[in-house]
Image (tube, rainbow, N blue to C red; front, side):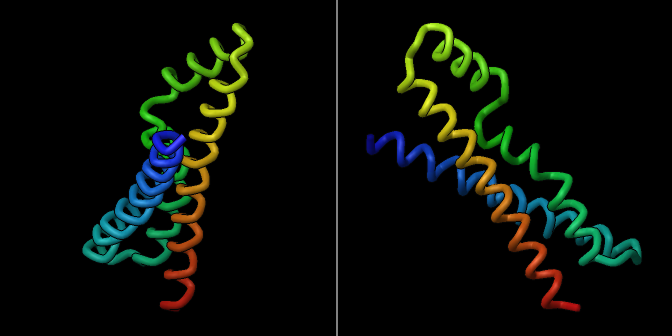
Length: 108
């Protein structure tokens, strides 16, 4: 159980970091080229959400194959774990997105 919780936290923070880091570093290019960095930062955060979650899971195919085999073979524990991993990664990406929106809103 401890390993499961550690992996949930790992996926959550990986997705969160990808959104925050990617948006902040990506917005630097907007500042250099004369575009609005905060608008670009919000757009990047929105566009990166799905990619950050998939990358945090470790690739969508492996996770989906494990989910499929768990469903077909009746291994409920495996299905619950995979759904937890997927939810954790998407939650991290969404929290990162919300933090970027809050940061951009406070700078206006």
